Length: 237
Image 1 (cartoon, one colour):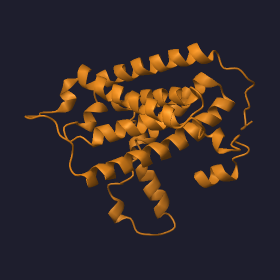
Image 2: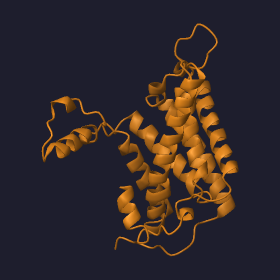
Image 3: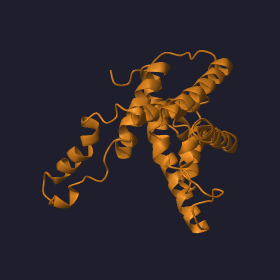
């Protein structure tokens, strides 16, 4: 996908790194993003204490410094790769093509659906290498999507999280804030053994939290930037 984007980058309106969102300032929006992540996760505990699971002592981190570094590396990689693809490229192209609100909805939908791709097909060991094996694996990966598993609380939460990250991105066309939010949430959830990650994606109260934070970001964006202007550049027509 990245190779295809590179080949057609000019037609997609991607001439410089700034067009994806890699621009200054860096640390301030990144820290703001981390602050939003702490707020979202912390507010989740307030509104739904069961996320903490059953604990008999004061919560402690998962383990050693080595474990924390592994989780940090994973969080940074996930945030960077997904935000470049979903916000820097996909949302950026949609913004130039179909307008702000449709772009947010469309990119958030793709973001939610992408998390239902099964990257470990159940009967993968039974596959034998041949000309059609790749297509069989691909079809197996898409089974959760085809079974409409995304029509669920988990799908709604991922969609709303995509909206929040999208609003954070268009607020200045700076990709560092959504990277901070995304990476911060992943790190906080997976670095503490007392947090149950699955509950964050299966409790309806979490969707309310994301709606609140998305609304706050949207209000600030509209207040300080005003309505977006400019002629749409529908690249695919």
